[in-house]
Length: 268
Image (cartoon, rainbow, N blue to C red; front, side):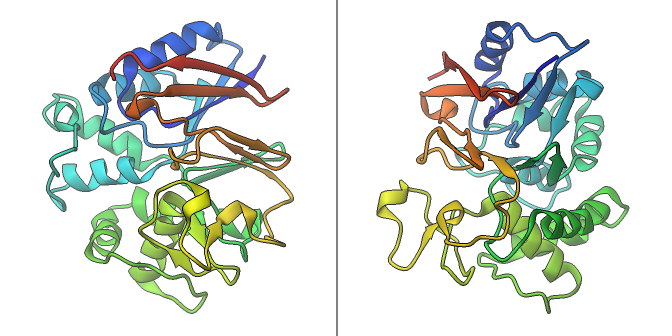
């Protein structure tokens, strides 16, 4: 039995299928951890969602920013942008079923010394605290009034965390951290717009995982979201968005021994 963490698929089903074959995945005994962004920008978001959903207990998924965008789009809360490629999902006969399934997924999963999250954690958060905060958002997202959360998330362009936040602003800020964070200050102030390589981060900001003394170092964080970072494996970090949808590679890392498996993305 092996557990494989897989980077941002973003609708690249052909690359995912190649990678699954490469690792000789057996759903009867193996497990897949997906770091989020199953959909968007690639050509086959619908096929990816159907495949992962049908894995049932063999797959663990955390939501990424593109997954949340799909839920919001299906709920009529946002309009598609020129580069969005989720119309296949929105027009599918099983769209409602797929979106309802997405809403039941986690924002953070913590098990066996690993923490799976799409983007990252603020330096002042322990993994345990982050899991509790994620659970607040998950409860709202899975409930009848999930649109309130999504309206708050997509009505603002800049979020900063404070423990004093309340209501939907608090929940939207937690969701923004877990699905959008790349760089922040030592004090945990988020830089919300930068997506380039770490070496060119704005002055005063560092990759969240390089903040000295961050409180989540007790676990190995498995994340994606940052294609310009590329594959980055450290003692307590597995950042595995290797830019498949941008013409690079899709990555899987076997958690038991950190063995890396990659396939080229044939769609780009």
